[in-house]
Image (cartoon, rainbow, N blue to C red):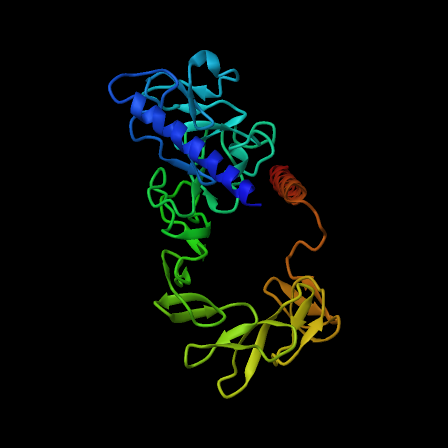
Length: 344
């Protein structure tokens, strides 16, 4: 077992040393296949890779610098100043280089099994980033697709959060902003995201999900609620996912653990009640109150939309136009008839 750990450590040291040699060999001159000084700064799965080549027109592919002839797929397009201007379909951009979809390194960043064009999406850009990364709102063939949740430098004014391991992207497409951290790195001094997700703060209270400040709980894990003392206490209703105080000494269940269950209006029980559009159930498979956009009909929820005929929008528009034409024609005919009759 010890020799396996020794071998793994040796492999990591070799990978790091190779990048270090590239830096040292490129200090005074452009050299093909070499990384520019201090630019072996891309960390993927614990190993270091290049973000800018020493030779301006080298191709930066899969974290390594290769001569144009060595880029068999021509994945790096229009290289300049040691980085790629954009990536050919089949590759996506990350930290100045182009990485192959489903490749050894690319699969550690992007979860797409194939290129954007083949999947009917944006060519040269990743659509689904792996856990630990978020998709840039400005992802494109010439833009970085995925940004690490802990990358505080980021790309195109979109950044991650220090010590963050899980996150969601800034909300609006084309926006610039900070990812929302949903989980902090293990071992980071028991840190958890703050309530707005823009930093990891010490958060040691039991069953606390987020803290508003150091060790001050803001929200609790599923199955717990925050009491007046800012402590997380268990929901007392069986099968309850989210609960809240009833204003006295009791609790109200507001959501059940199972996706097919609903709480009753009183918040005292979870019922098996897999009814679309239902908010509360009074007993098994009997809805007591529907969500907005639905109305209660015999214990079920029916859409309250005016279009109950299931006609498409195009069909409704066509019928409306036809009705207008018919009415207009009839009015025109009557006007003509009476005018002509009057002249007669």
